Image (cartoon, rainbow, N blue to C red; front, side, top):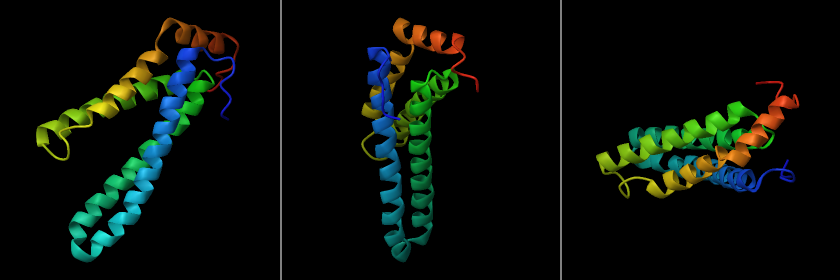
Length: 141
């Protein structure tokens, strides 16, 4: 599951960025869900919203892990999914900055996602996905 032998360096780096980020997102969502339970005593309405956001964060983290593992196997749909997650990260950072909640946007998270996404589309990465497709390794595409 964690073997990256045979992958171009660009995909190795991108895989680990996406995989570790997904683990952190999943764990953060789970911990946030547990922490939101305390909030129910003081503000049930706010706690419900926080709980839903933490469930969403955990789901995105889990999805990111699945996409990273599939991307490593040469699945083009996973590369597109990770690219879409980067777009969603940009939208959330902009909305967060406009609303003024928190630290003004998650620009660091977006930039890390952008770097990992760029690595997915470089020539060596493109060649890996093309080779995986031509070898029949991506039967579920």
